[in-house]
Length: 179
Image (cartoon, rainbow, N blue to C red; front, top):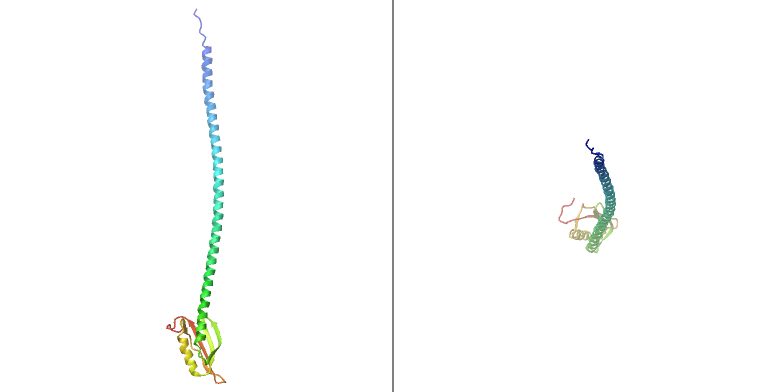
């Protein structure tokens, strides 16, 4: 009889080798999944931190923009107010010059009893001792720069024999037509 060959140790070694291979494959897969999960968690944390920074920066920029817009609106309001003040000052200077010119243009025999600003027109009321003083006043008012005659007023004689007159002056060129 021939000696028997025992194949059991060889089979056992092959089985252990296969078991080691598949165990390494399984553990390697688990390690890959764990590594992938760790990378994803780290990326998510990084993204959240970056998003938080973006949100904070966007809020800061929005606040800065709001402050800047408020400052610009305040500056615009201030410029508008200053422009209105300048317009009023120019208007005051212009009327001051016109009133001084009217005062200088009055003949000695004529004087003003009332000045009234109404609806963009200056109404003058006054008295004159003599009628030629009214004609001189009319010529002087016609020569005033920047003013033109409006609708003519009444000229009457009072109980004392003085001439009462009413004149309306409008800002504008003396050569322009009266309304």
